[in-house]
Image (cartoon, rainbow, N blue to C red; front, side):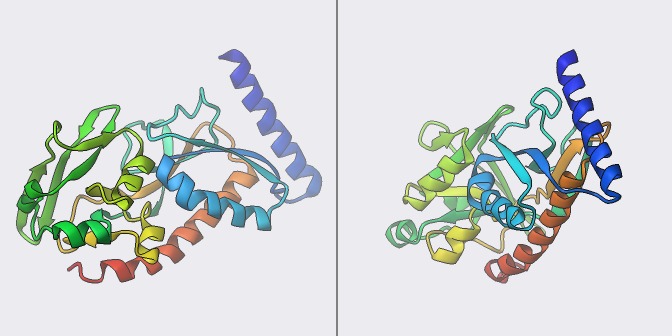
Length: 247
């Protein structure tokens, strides 16, 4: 533990020294970034390539996990996560809103039809996530003043602790999944998935960037944060077309 703290302190000193020598913020060095598996593979990886085109002296260590990494002991500079986190020691910078939607492949819908309201889901195959806090198989949906909760049956449904697998199963036609619209953006554009019951909303879980409040934020991390804010803003507008039918 002591060694890890010393390594982080020395890296911060190097960053500050380089900035003073040049009289400006130098964007270079390694950034250790953590993200969920699906978002990291299908969205963030491409964005990091774009960032590298602007800042070729930055190197990345990308850690993908659907559980929240321990930023200190995993030596993570920045974590991208969905929802509000209980750890008040972390600085959370909101990056974008995030809709979670029910989705399925067009082939599955053609073969089985589509639900019109949450209670209809009992007639369909469902896919759900298992998290560290348990099974995320309770789907609460609202439409105006209407509220319905559907509990996905454990015995007859597919489950996984990997968000990328749940998306792949949905694309392959194994059933209906609850996914972040960010995770399935490419699938919506390419027609591999479609949103079901868009008028029914699940609770929003905004995207946040998390970092240690006690740690010096290097110029490369600040530059990446600003870049991510811009990318999220641009793509949020593009995703709006798939949610236009939502009140």
